[in-house]
Length: 398
Length: 58
Image (cartoon, rainbow over all chains, first blue to last red; front, side, top):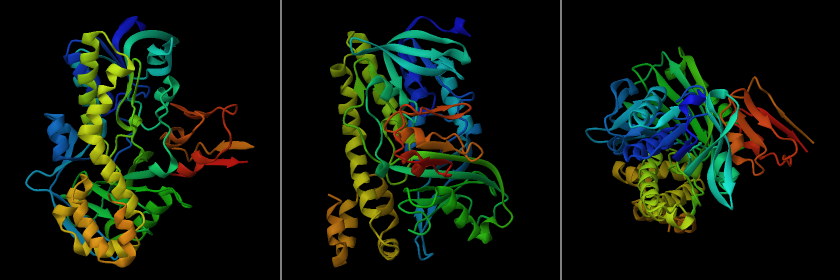
């Protein structure tokens, strides 16, 4: 497959997840030569995702094919630790539970249709630097011997491992406090009361700092998983215990797929670029810190990255200073908001189950949705400050 | 000092790779590769593993 690959490109993208594929697609549409490399044998598998996509994200994605959309979602049912639940309505169009394997492949196909060269089983093994500037990559195309490919800009979209950035000299190692442990089953033959809503379970005994999710992919099939802070017990341990304690849903269930992964939940980077180099998506920690969703963030970042790289290539200046516009635009559009959500995460992880129960009773559906988007912090602070013990914690929101 | 991974348990998700401060871990199709020369046995990789497949003995 060496014949598929040229000696040099305008842009080489490492990683064909949503961030990588969409950056590649946008740049190819703008007329640049783009090589999109994915180290795994199959784009989209194994997934590391709960597969939920809200409508705001659907809007960015464009016309998602039917075979990627497993089920339409109209809202969420959120359980507090005491077992009470709050219904969150998403409005007329809620979102979808996706089939990520189909979805990621569709995005890669779109990149290919736009003119990018897309190759799976093709790992970027190293970054080529000359005089401190990134000039290209070393890669094994379709598992063959390592070759050198020159590139004006290299985009690291290699997911949470984020090794490409670190090899290039951009320190993306995330601190342990900003990484959650994720574990997930796709389960069959479930007894779900309302398979048109996603269900979330909160509680320090259920999932420290995080939550257990049930995202329906069909009437009796769901992505069932957990995201949790690091603790003595593993994420798998917590999820298995949850499943065992809910026979009303799981007593006849089967497991058709098992996945796991790390989830960046903070530690946003002020600088995500080098000379001739830029990072997007999980690799740049671009994930919502309260719900751990990264699909929308990767897509927004890809959009910004493509715009900035296009401008830089047209001007013939791919230096750090030139590409740094990506930092400015991302922080303005997403970073500032996500930083607030990170603070919210830091506050909520200090709350006891009793506090969480109280919040569930006090906060409306609109406020809950707002909080996940980095707004309504004042409303939350007011509720917390009614309790003298929580005043100090509430201050951390600002 | 020893670093061990239970390859039956490991789901090849890369969580450990992301937190290794020394770039001592690499995710390959066949599983996680460990570079003993770079590893400082800090144990961070073992803590993030969702299925606790890694054992680090200092």
